[in-house]
Length: 85
Image (cartoon, rainbow, N blue to C red; front, side, top):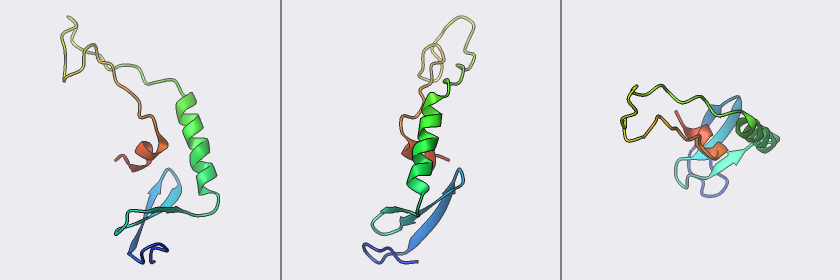
């Protein structure tokens, strides 16, 4: 498949049941019909879910791995969620 913008080669990725085509040349992302709505719904569900519980840290409260107290932040965008491994 060729990119409709620059005619580069397209690569297909599947993330959470959604097929995403990305150009190897211009890095453009192309979606099929209905996939944007699916991604929007998934993002809403992701942000509505409670954050995961913090991982247990050292009992004495010492810094661990550059984070104090085991606090972890969720990704803020569905784009990060789609392309994370």
